Length: 209
Image (tube, rainbow, N blue to C red; front, side, top):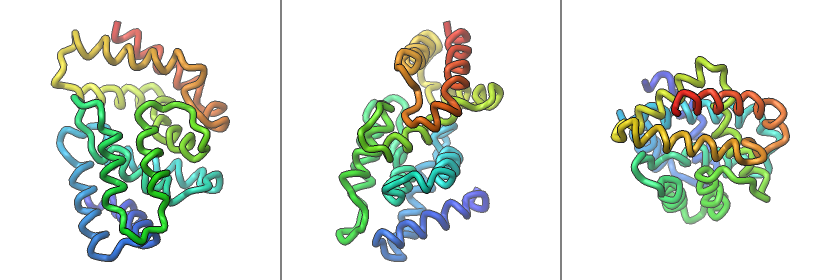
């Protein structure tokens, strides 16, 4: 696994160096991060998801006002992930801010808000938060076969719940996306991915009900 994620580690190391972490702290924090995202229960919310988000981040880097805050938030937004809990984003945000060095160049309040925003996926007046949300949700607009892999991975993460509980819960969450005027928060993502995401979600709902 480590070999696949070397570029991820390099990116992480560079970011943490730039925002004020010492070398030993960076090494330890990377090991902690890798361990958290590599738990056996993580079928979707793992380092592959982080890599996918960073690919979007690199594509739209020039659009961002606070690139370091966005990148740091990508690394930590699912740091704590327990499928039976409702406060994963809050706990992840608290942890991400807690480990920052006292002399950091990062806006910790913004990081906290960014990570918390990945729970509700609602439009935000801070445009960088909208970009982060869209990076997180881009999976919804994958080709159907890839989208199918994604929702099967999500089902595995919720395997403690039997179908009679999981299916209506998942359908309700998906319908919530469709009820919003838009799934994506930036004009760019709406233009590219809105239609595809809605088709995928509608197809998945049909399989659930």
